[in-house]
Image 1: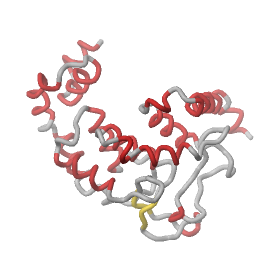
Image 2 (image 1 turned 90 degrees about the vertical axis):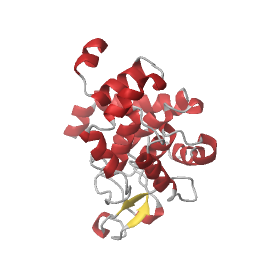
Image 3 (image 1 turned 180 degrees about the vertical axis):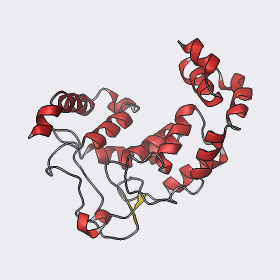
Length: 225
């Protein structure tokens, strides 16, 4: 199957497969990397993250947000030796709160409990993505990432991770009861923690996985209530 993908895939996917799945040395893939850097999709994504906070976060799952494009580029195998990626990482790191959490540029309307202003703040459905991006970009974990991870982990409850936001977002929270699990926040927290040695096999991760499975298995019954 991998051979079939390599024979028909675009340069960026070939590079990702050979680097991440076949574990080939990146120095042997220079020509392929040079080719993918000319790919119109890759060039477009790199251009879009140049001004990282150029778009207000209104829907955290919007694939056009800079954070999702940055994560895609990092997943392909590109890193901070690319000027646009280095710039995006520096811009993320320039907005960090006292808890070590990196902030997004957001405006939550007053009728949703927010301040109705363009502010830097975080929700639990975007903060883990920022930390994941920094981790994959090779930023020092103990110096720049661990504090924020530990704080977000402290928000975990028996039923998973609830909707949580920074003070800048006032009383905003997502749908459902206050104590309910936020499936998306829980999922991206699990994704983040799975990449960190001290948390990968922790009880918090095991509980989070069980919560997600339970929500999936009981989704029809829960939606009918």
